[in-house]
Image (tube, rainbow, N blue to C red; front, top):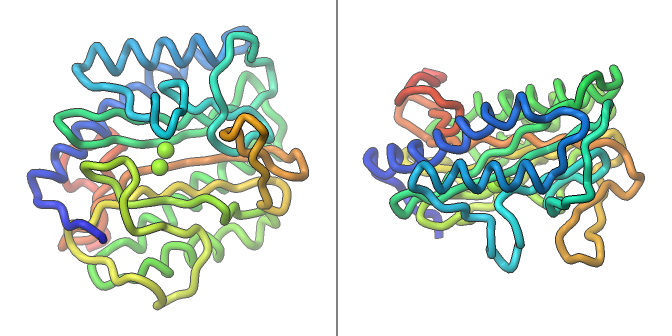
Amino acid sequence: MITIKSAREIELLRAAGKIIYDLHQVLKPLIKPGISTLELDQIAEAYILAQGAKPNFKNYNGFPNTICASINDTVIHGIPRKDMILKEGDVISIDMGCILNGYHGDSAWTYGVGEISLKDQELLDVTKEALYQAIRVVKPGAYLGDIGYAIEQFVSPHHMGIVTDFGGHGIGRNLHEDPHVSHKGKKGQGVVLKEGMVICIEPMITLGSGKVKVLKDGWTVKSVEAKTSAHFEHMVAVRASGYDILSDGSSPMQGTNG
Ligand code: MG
Ligand code: MG
């Protein structure tokens, strides 16, 4: 069931999203060679708690930490570790969320560690732009399939692989709500977007085929060809005037596609 959020609920979601946006800005300058993913996790947890919020990934279906820290060929759900130390040229996706006043925030971003290869930089640029291409189609009356279609149309010429085993989702009082948001799709197909729906759009793109496998730990999702992967995610509300990004630190209703 897809829940429709009131204007007040959208602001509560934005407040949770703002904490995660701000936290990304806190972590960004710390993403340097020598820091462990567990240190980043501990900083994130302390930050979220200091805002009066709680980490919502921790203990979610047994996930052990506050952030997902996914390096290089790990696409998503990397478990932070003391012995996983960032090195020059790595690419790290940090996905994290929190719950504040009963509403969830969730946003992922991929960062280069020091200087990264041109190919990896292109992957990050393409994945981020794919996210924004998808966001721009969001408005009442658009179809869920339009989102996946926009991503596919943009990514295809770059010969990168779109991950389809995992996708985006609705968000609200629960971290994961209906609908499932696929990052491939057909124009004019699927659920019709209505004012008040809030979804996470989160393309995961690899320099491989987009095929992934889950490791024995039950969490870590890797590119089957061991190729570099990227993941960018925003929370997006469907408003009468178009889209409204809730996790980019902006004030109410700055984003609109009229
Ligand atoms: Mg996420
Ligand atoms: Mg998500």
